[in-house]
Image 1 (cartoon, rainbow, N blue to C red):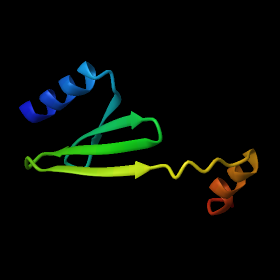
Image 2 (image 1 turned 90 degrees about the vertical axis):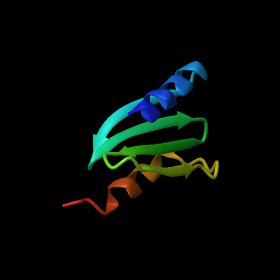
Image 3 (image 1 turned 180 degrees about the vertical axis):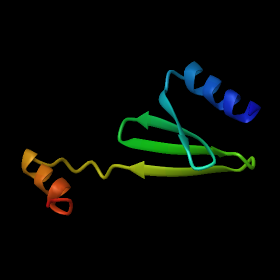
Length: 74
């Protein structure tokens, strides 16, 4: 638990935006950076899992919203 608190303290000191969420058997810290999103999971068993989502800087028009829903239409 102290690892999680230390990590949150570092984020706050660096003025990095984050959100907390409970997932599976742990706490997820969702970190938002320009062009990146990190999911840092502190698991119940003490392990830490990190997944990064990095933008390729490609910008889409509003028509791309249809792609979002294409696979979920009735």
